[in-house]
Image (cartoon, rainbow, N blue to C red):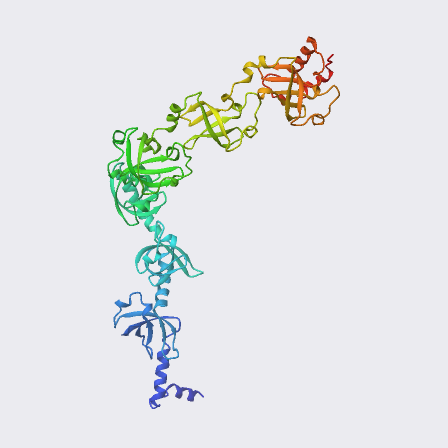
Length: 576
């Protein structure tokens, strides 16, 4: 056995067939390559879509052009490191990966040499949900969209294909991923720039900046290290609805520094301040009462803005558009673009406001009416409409006067106008008052007739027997219209010598009755009547007693309708 083993150690394979020798050589060669390792290689051929790489194995491998960061800079003869994924694929060639080789080497450097907080170069590869995948020395790191810039990013595609300095902010060893930030580096840089810029900046400085972002209330302008706010009111002397009417992102501007808050690092800017204020001299140019011509630039629910000159606008309020018509909205009278003539009513230079009027171009028709229809004049008009408190009578040109319910009758209390009038009815009225400032005309219906109470002592005396018709029935009595449209009240206790529970059991509206006057109250314009006293001879004492009961019931200023309970004592009055 020992002899055979010794002889074996010195076997000579030189005489073996060539094919077997090649097999042994290939086996020896393949033992130098292990799957999952990084090996060196050389580019021996470059095609449009891929490169052929020789690694010293029995066959070369192929690497797609897409795995090269900058394939156009790759040349034949370049030496590279590649990752050996398989020794032999279906084509009996090794499967190689340049990306995995780079990623493996990069991961080793990042985790062992760099660490979180390290600054690296990153090439923006492609968009993914929530951010961008970045090549960091061959390793794919994630850059969140919120970490891309210091301000909102409108289009991430603008960053693809570019290289930036990035800061490693998170390394997850378990998940084998890295998160990077560009924003943190920018903020650190800008912080230093802001401090320097703020220390050098003063109010009224003129600075050049670029519009960075536009919002509803203004625009943010990059001044080269700090953003300033250009408020919408400081963009133009003209009235604008949105900053985009004047500005666009990326626009370069010369602005004036109008305010600085160094503690909060805030800068306020002005653009309109670069030009002269068009409001200078406006008060002298357009004095109160003068007429101006302008173009309607904007319509609002409450009025119309009219541009008098570039940067100077005035407001025509709804109430200043017509003397007689009630305007619901400005668009009922004017349109954007209309050329209008108006009268200057007021100017507030500090607030940059001018009040204009359309109706003032003509004389106030209410003043004309005051001259045409003096107080006390009798006129005839038609009832146009009624409210709870009065009726409106047309005088002329859509101008109405109002008859208040208290001016409708001398002799009766009118609660609602429809007791006396109806729409369309033509009536004779008297002008009581015309107030041009309040645009109000007060009319009187009763004033067109003689007040019967002026001679009441000649018409009715206590003890007189009178006739009239029942006009109204209430729970406490009946109202009777006498001559001259004067109403008298028959209390329920004065309807009959017999007890009466309900007035309607004895009387109804329209009945003609005969009654005796037992009370005449000139101050309160009230007459008390009694039916049961008609056929009785009243002594002065009886009349005095009845009068006192009515006086007690009719307290000055109180309505007749409130005296029912008080007059129940009338039942006890004995009339001989």
